[in-house]
Amino acid sequence: MLLAFDVGNTNIVLGVFKDGELIQNWRLESDNNKSADEYGMIINQLFSYENLNIKDVEDVIVSTVVPSVLFTIQHLAVKYFRKRAIVIEPGVKTGLIIKYDNPKQVGADRIVNAVAAFAKYGGPLVIIDFGTATTFCAVSEKSEYLGGSIAPGLKISSEALFEKTAKLPKVELEEPGHVVCRNTIQSMQAGLVYGHMGMVDYIVRKMKSELQELTESGKEPIVIATGGFADLINDGIDCIDHVDKLLTLEGLSIIYEKNKKAQKIKRNDECRQESPENQKE
Image (cartoon, rainbow, N blue to C red; front, top):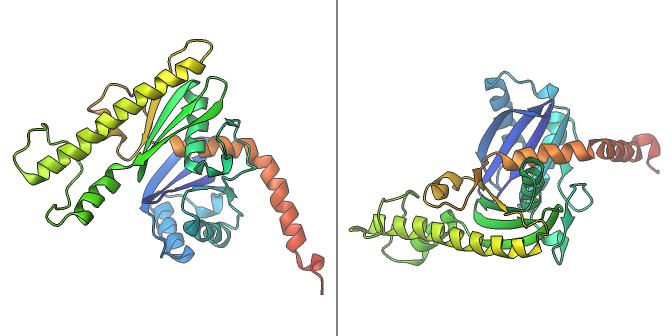
């Protein structure tokens, strides 16, 4: 089995694949203060509840935008699964041609999403990830990652209103049903949710227009949405073609298959170099 971690600023999504098929997935809170042992015990309990055996995990792969949590997950993989985690970073094969000015600046989650979306839907693509930040990514029909846009996510926007104003409360992120609202909570919900819908609609239209100028076949870009708020935003706009909540995990599985042979050789070499007989006095 393959254990895949998608480590975000707010949540850690993890999934178990068997023979390339996702058989179980969970969502945990990202916490810089949690140790490898704490995460290990949680994962052990999750496996036990689903009648899965952690000894059946053959490999671990990690995509993260939170460097402070990466070491914890790497330590977790070694201690609880006896595996060196494969980390999505420069040098890992993805099948994408990265056109970003500095490819190292592209978030690992954005690359993983692009790999999965292109494999499932072809190109050109617009991929929206509704996470802590709302990201928009453009992928050409030639499997080129062209770039995109980054905006504050719904949760960040909501927290900013609460933290930076004296009288506005915390609110649940849901549609109030109208924009002429008669109380503060619904007024905030309308501004946050419908405002985000309007932003998404505008950026998608503009991104599709720019992508079509670069698309020789004239094919219209497909718009894919993923992330925790994808369903909420999709309910109020028409520009999204598919909501795919498990896109990132599927991308990790695809990248693993592209890299498992090379990574196995690399890790075996590292283990030989670290063995006692190869250490100098």
